[in-house]
Length: 184
Image 1: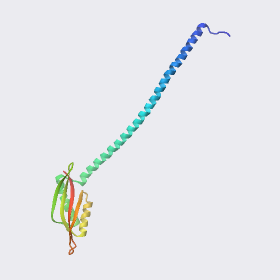
Image 2 (image 1 turned 180 degrees about the horizontal axis):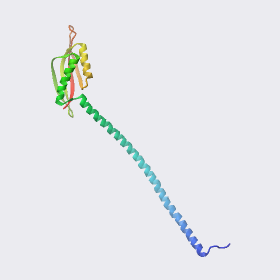
Image 3 (image 1 turned 60 degrees about the vertical axis):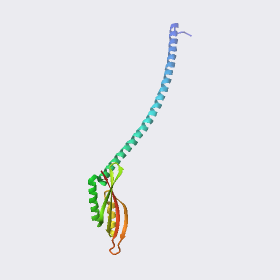
């Protein structure tokens, strides 16, 4: 066979072959490390993604909870404004409301009306207990109770004691203990 390459060219080609194989092995080893680093980074990325989704879910839950508490705060403020009496003026308003209730239900207290004041140990809320006797027909007493129940302020009938049922005029006498709540 004819030798087309000279000895020097063969050595250069041999050297280049060794460098080529060395480069392939070198870059192959580097590529293995990079491949491992890539898969490690992909795994870490998916772990961080799961962590992010968990944190995002917690954030949404906390936001929802915050919005619920904010609505609760608004509801409590509405309750304070609409259903509780306010401070010293509230006691006057309670007395006026009682007079309005007596007039609309066609009953009158017999004797005096006693007021007792209690501190509820709940922030600024207090309770006033009103005691009085009522004399009226069954219908008017029922109307009185329904008026209290449907009244827009917090008025609670704590106790009703039947004292006397008159057979001559059909009147019933009851002792009523009524509670109202106010903020001082």
